[in-house]
Length: 151
Length: 151
DNA sequence: GACCAACGTTGGTAGAACCAACCTAGATGC
DNA sequence: GCATCTAGGTTGGTTCTACCAACGTTGGTC
Image 1 (spheres, rainbow over the protein chains, first blue to last red):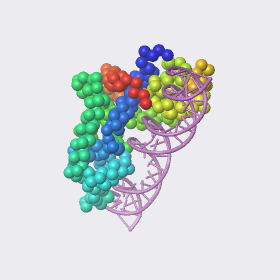
Image 2 (tube, each protein chain N blue to C red):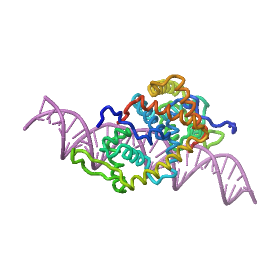
Image 3 (cartoon, protein in one colour):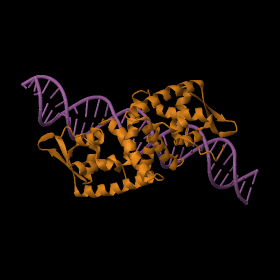
Image 4 (cartoon, chains in turn purple, cyan, yellow, brown):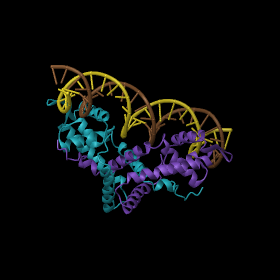
């Protein structure tokens, strides 16, 4: 076995966008998991949505983030128990829960963002700033082309 | 609620590479799942490695693909039962299994590749050919920078 | 008032990425 | 030779994410 051989993945895969994206996502998840206690990636997403758009119903959070109703529910419950959000029935529409970020939630969000940015930086090691921006804009283009890909 | 508002994800997330990559990966998985009977994504990866590099041990397959030994084992067993690969102990090193792709495996690989390319095409709808190449090369750069990120 | 759609909730499924422990077989040290 | 270590395969389990199904409640429509 040629040791100098870099043990490359097969060509078919190496140039297949969905495989590449999956591997990059796994890398990001691995780096994140190395510094975050638990499934804080979902927490970060939900808190960011609440911070930017104000109080939202769980369904709206799901639509913003492309998450399933059920999964949003689980995250909201966890955040509620931790005191990071306040969740109460909407008096104007009692089907809904109004979820609001708390002061503690904002602090938590800041911590998570710092970690996320650190992970991104490590993930993109070796890419110049212009390349990073390009990559972000291309990925963003793919996502917006597929519209509200919620579930 | 402004209906014309495109229900955008929060800015913090929209420009975070690992989140974007994750969403693109999910999109790819969803599109793939819509046309493939079972967990054929892993089958595709393993078969592609065997086709390109010839017979390999399971451990080598894992290193090529960045997969866990255990997961390779499961895929190899499935492919073996289906007759897509031939798996037998290595006479030169009886710890190893030599996994070889069969004629049926090659046919299966061709089918899977056609599906994968179709998925990629749908995934990248709206991107010009030059943008697609750019995206692929940037993702590839990220991956190669992180070396043999096997587990 | 009957019917339908939206929302939250509970519970369950499938796949991917792991980790732990075991056994066998080769490699390395003395 | 013999003890030790490492690599490989196998079994079994865990976590997280993305789903799907069903239910009860509530609001909107005909």
